[in-house]
Each structure stands twice: as structure tokens, then as C-alpha cells.
Length: 224
Image (cartoon, rainbow, N blue to C red):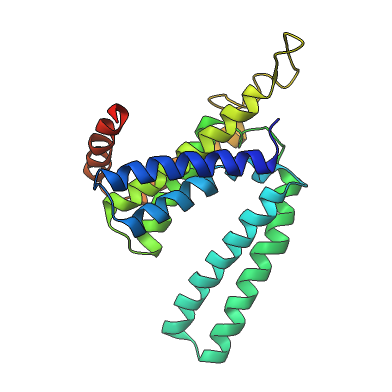
């Protein structure tokens, strides 16, 4: 299994190259390319949020804590006094960063349902919804961010699978086949939950013509 540094470095470099190519082709602006690079880099560590002791879960839940704080502040700005808003924002960060992080680590299994292509789609869908609904980004850019999250997460699974091959010993390690998979099986409840989340993301995401437009614009990049 590849370590944290390998995951973040490879996903970051691959995302930078793709985002740079899109900027060079004038498909996105430089600030938008920077956002896409960050999305791909974050996707590169997302599959490890089910690892109890990994640095990934701490980093990701810190980011989630910041996101929760932003949501709380946006809510408090409309309905609460300033002091109460600040307290709510701080409480949101603490709840997400510690109890929620602990519960997530306690009730998930590493390389389980979250280490799959189905989970990658959920990560990507979440990125699309957060980008469009919370940050009010244009629909096309939101879909691009989701695609970059998926690419980064896919690179993570691919690296873990490649590290399961012992070229010197000409053998496959026991971990081979546990990383790059469509979904965990048999695991009906986790898979049902992931499918429900994916359906919810699809329902909340911007109109699909924006996705089709993004894919059409990305295809010419394969010839660069």
C-alpha cells in the first residue's frame, strides 16, 4: 500500500498537469485551474478516510470542520447575534473534528466500501454539490471540480493496487484486489448507503448538460 506522501504527491502532480493543460487550452482561468488542482489533491487522500490512524483522516476532518464552521457562520449571520454566531461556528468545528471523526474511524473498515469506485463517485458528487450549493460556483466549474476529485481518488486506488504487486518476488501480495474495485462485496448496508448518497448528490447537483459540456471540452485534451 502506498504511503500518505506518495498519494498526495502523485495526485497533486497529476492534477497540476491536467489543470495546467486546461488553462493552456483556455478552458479555465488560472484561478480556476488552482481550484481544480486543490480538488484533485484532496481527492488523492479521500479513500483513506476510513484508516483509523492515518494522517489522511485528520487532514480531511479538519477540512470538514472548516466547512462545518463556514456553514454555521453563514446560518448565524442571518439568524443569530454575532457572539452566538461565533460560538456556533467554533462548536461546529469541534463536533466535526473530534466526535464525528472518532465515530467515523470507529465504525468504518479500512479498504472497505469507501475504498472503491462507487465511493469515489460519492466523493466527486459531494464536491459538485458543495461547490455549487455552498460556494455558488458556476455549474460547469462545479462539475470540473467533481471530476478532479474523482481523478485524484482513482489515482489513490490505482497506486494502492500497484503497490500490491511485488515485481522482484514476481508475486501478488494478499492486499491485491482490495483497492481498485467497483464496490465492496458482500456489504449490502454500506453499499446501499453509498448509493443513496450518490442519488442525493445527483439530485442536488447542477443540470447534467453542464456535465456533458465539461466532458466534451475535456476530450480534446487527450490529444495534447
